[in-house]
Length: 465
Ligand SMILES: Cc1cc2nc3c(=O)[nH]c(=O)nc-3n(C[C@H](O)[C@H](O)[C@H](O)COP(=O)(O)OP(=O)(O)OC[C@H]3O[C@@H](n4cnc5c(N)ncnc54)[C@H](O)[C@@H]3O)c2cc1C
Image (cartoon, rainbow, N blue to C red; front, side, top):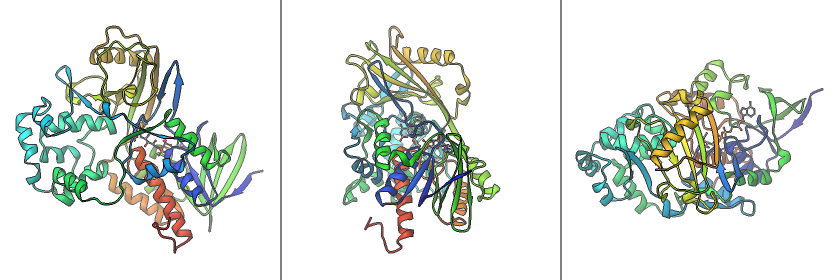
């Protein structure tokens, strides 16, 4: 017999989006449950400690650029602590012509850097006087060429986009992929003037915009949220999950520990990636499902390398990125032990190497031996290691790592809005819309919980929450 429970909200997926949503709802006294396919909550977030190294299988850092981040860690005080990246290692390195160059962090460095051509350096100075773009569908590459020049695209934006999206600026649309940058041009007519004015004019509290992790790794954040929400409210290892709509409620069926179960609820929140949506929601039109599923994801391989006794180049930066024009086999290398506490034994180093992305999707299929061969070749040369002798090697593959917000984003957003408008109490969350970063995921959760609470108590405003 099917076991049935009633809840005030059901959340599908226990990644950062689902767990943060549960946390905000719990804070407001909403009786909710999270249903998760995997053995443990956290989604792509997983932290391990081994041989004196503490490393991440998924995201390593976030940027504290939404109010949700500080708010969430605030609610978790006592469970887990936010850790900001050490500012002494804030330099970002870019590989050009056989060596690392620091990405300029000020006007003097910008003039001196070998990364950009003299012509483009002049062009950057004239950026405030350039005409405002008028196409919301303009790609990032198009916008950067128009405002800053080709060398800036190749040696600043291209590697930056590899580091965030594992993507291609020729495919990503600025309005959706980097909405803050798009708004700077639209509102102020210039990135430079816009950034300066925003800094000067913005009053009141604002996010720190610093790079963050959690002390002991993001696994601690997940444990903290689990404790806040209550472990009994997060059911892992569910299978065959489907959701239907009755007159008043949603009915979610699934199997757990060999038992068929059903939860009914007036509120249903999906946090599934586009590739996991097929066959789950019987009440969304097949046409809309098709559009949502069409979202392209970059595949990414993350290789964790722990060196007990580091003999390579001096590591005093956040990481190094490799522009695609340099034609190398990796996207970049992050140096977590340079800016986070206790990630490697004293004298050692922890590196995270990234491969794949939209330009080299085939890498995800390579054997472990071949992947390690690439890592050895690339890391030995780029990090100037005399002997490649890591005492820790871990390979994590993600076939659907980072969604690419391209020209079809508007169509997808319309399909999502239609599915939500036709189904009261239904929310399509997760990284299919609203940003790929951890801060975006937390902020989306905060906004959805806010909407749910407001619809229950129409007189309640955000300010009161
Ligand atoms: C390798 C990698 C590195 C990253 N690095 C960074 C970074 O440095 N900084 C940053 O800000 N962001 C980074 N990101 C992005 C960030 O980690 C994600 O945007 C965020 O963690 C996604 O959370 P989510 O809950 O939306 O999705 P997910 O974490 O994917 O969670 C979705 C959950 O749904 C579950 N699920 C799927 N199907 C079903 C089903 N049928 N029934 C029940 N459950 C189901 C899945 O098992 C999963 O647990 C990175 C992502 C990856 C993959």
